[in-house]
Length: 273
Length: 305
Image (cartoon, rainbow over all chains, first blue to last red; front, side, top):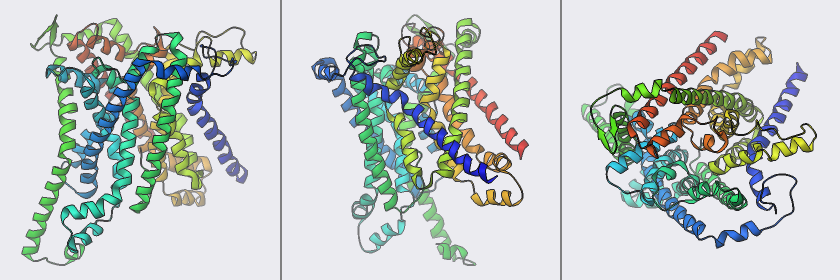
């Protein structure tokens, strides 16, 4: 009985370790094959080289796609964070009728098949006579980033001590002054974390961009185009590795900030984001 | 506020004040959420209604004929190609959601019960791979499962097989493996949250009353975490049915799913009403399947208790 008890976490620990290996397996092959001399990704490795990386800045289409992705990512991050702040603040601060329905609709893109969201948006935009451009991609990205922004921001706003704001008002601050000097400093980490998370999602998002983009491809669309050519694979792997490192850095920053926000507002628990 | 609420009889003026306050609270809350709400309404709810409307129309070349008809649904449900794609998509999403939940449960359990101080580090470790580009992860699986790929060259290097297996890539199984990997975090997190909520003293009580580890798990932990299992199942099952990238990259001819057919109707084939009918049909059927799965799980939980 006691033996079984001691054995259980061990077995589970081994399983947990194996699971992590499974999760990271496809991710680690990107950097490994991106510095392989051979153009085909298989073992044994031929030798290491950085030539695939050196070719990247010499590809004009790639530079354009990177620029497009940055524009879309920044716009989507700012818009979805603003919309996220409204929703998260409303949900944590107020109680109002229909709250569940409203937040259900806002969070719905999280559980709907992306293709359905994308084609519905496509039909409406085309019928409105809007031509497809980076702007329409931003509209789509904001839609799918908002649920993530909202959950990050709610974890930052929850447990926010309202009496601090009341105290500030009692001491003669205006509503705006209270917001600027009391509320804002406490929620800034959560806001930055939401910006980083939505930027990362937008940067990696493929399907929405695939349907909603015009003649200006974003990075994932560029990668999708390259995947058809086997000879382009090492370049894609190198690009993928860079994106991977970028996402990792941004998300680590977002996580650190989110935790700081949580500590500041004295809540415990883990956000599902 | 609370003091007034507990008081025996608040003054009428105070009561009036409070109800006005509450009203304005509700109003403020709604006003604050309305930009986000309107955004989702205009760009999500209305578009979906328009898709549903399209599914009852027909397309004559470039013009849309707006007379009500069920013709598109007849095609979607009876044409063998769409029926096959639909059945395969449902099978893939069922297999993937069951597999992710089954594999995710033990790790969520481990983190919740034995994670100790490192719980958030574990969760962070698990979520990191999912923030990397979905496209690139699918492509990595192509590299792993391919003819000259990692798995084949590895197995040959170990002398387990003599020539590369062709059965790894470009079929439904490759799609299932890739999606099971892609959606793992979405299953782990809800299960973990529900495990965290399990009152540990209930487990102690069960031990005191003579339940072994297995009985304790089946009779207390499992039923109490059923909400987490259910939401994990739904959060994986419904989106995966409409996956487009994975079947396209690793599915080959035998792994094509309904989303690829939907995309064709909005692209090359340019038959929006049929594409709309296929989308609506898929959503309705996968929701029904999800509903049945939830009922079965709840029933099972009630039985063991």
